[in-house]
Image (cartoon, rainbow, N blue to C red; front, side):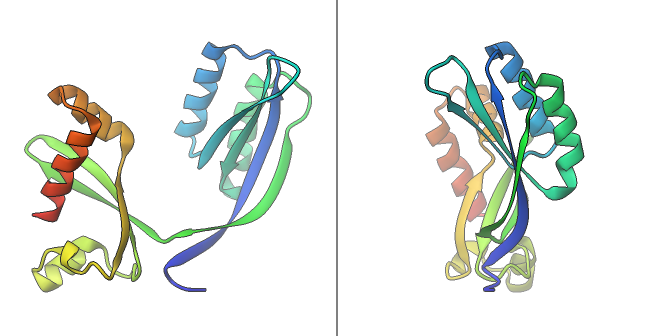
Length: 168
């Protein structure tokens, strides 16, 4: 497999939620994210007011996530599916400007070094090695919090942090 990608086993847990109100779902969703859920989706069930909840997790998180789902379970069944998931290889770095620190997720073609290590080796801006960077993305919650604190849009916050990162 190309080092640009990583393949790992993933579990999908599904349960029907017929009697869960919005407050319960919000609490469940927060608890799932806090316990390392990789993805959460809510699919409407036609013909009733419920929905199908799907949670993607790493196999090692199965027991923890199952116990959380059982606390909120309104049906008697939780379905489990196992599959391989292919994703871009990613690194996470932290960028600081004054008193603010934001996380950036970076996908590179050669993920053996972090961009910080490449910068230290070359003293060049890591973005000058564009052939090695496939994509990057700021953590949304951190970006949104920064934008709110500065009374600017998320787009303006992203442009600001892009400039900070590219010029470091």
